[in-house]
Image 1 (tube, rainbow, N blue to C red):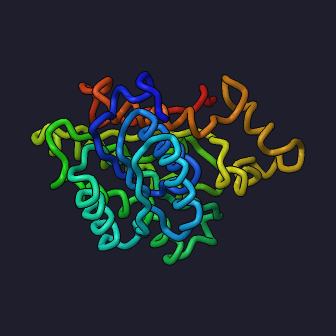
Image 2 (tube, rainbow, N blue to C red):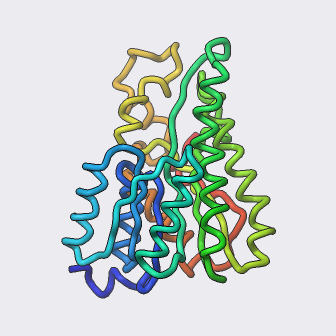
Amino acid sequence: MISTTQQGRFVGKAAVVTGGSRGIGAAVARRLAAEGAAVAIGYRGNQEAADALVAELAAMGGQAIAVQADVADPGQTAALIERTVVEFGHLDVVASCAGVEHFGALETITPADFDRVFTVNTRGQLFTVQHAVPHLPAGGRIVLTSSVSASKAVFHHALYAASKAAVESMVLNLSAELGTRGIAINAIAPGGTNTDMAAENAQRYVHPDLAGTQEPARLLGTRYALRRLAEPEEVAAGYAFLASEDAAYMTGRTLRLDGGAF
């Protein structure tokens, strides 16, 4: 069972987490559930992982459902939100964690690449907000996902970084509009995090001149003051903070969780 001390901040709250079946999204779902939230886990294709997470949270004493929804399709996002409200009776927290990675030299980027990356990373998050807001009460919380790449140069990473920089601008500008409804919107910009996506792309975060000199994760770790990548649970703590009353006077901001990247 989830202990009383863990339940505090989200007891009686309902949350939706897009991209919730893996990586940071799964860690966010676990953290919100551990603090008492009923959680809808949105996933694109990995039903097995999503169902396993629902079972895990249920075994902890939590309440969770898994809903297939590709954020590239606003209709599926709307259905995810509606299902959450029907299942739990209300919606209080939105954690938008779905995203795709991209590396490529300028001359290799195609219009299809642009559309794929911006459709998920930027448009997908915008329409998640649009569909969620009518259901959120005053005091509702929205947390989107940016990246330290939005403000830090990485070789061959321009397209991805641009899609995340747009998210930060979106959060800043929507904060004024949503503030009139009493809704706060912020973003998390994670640094290198120990997920399967990071493992798949670690070598690409290393400048070509340094490729092969060390194991990629170790080399990346030297770029952080804390000398290591983050664990997903550490990043999830940031989402939980922004979704809670502890961040009641914070909106329009992007919180960097980068271990002191330099």
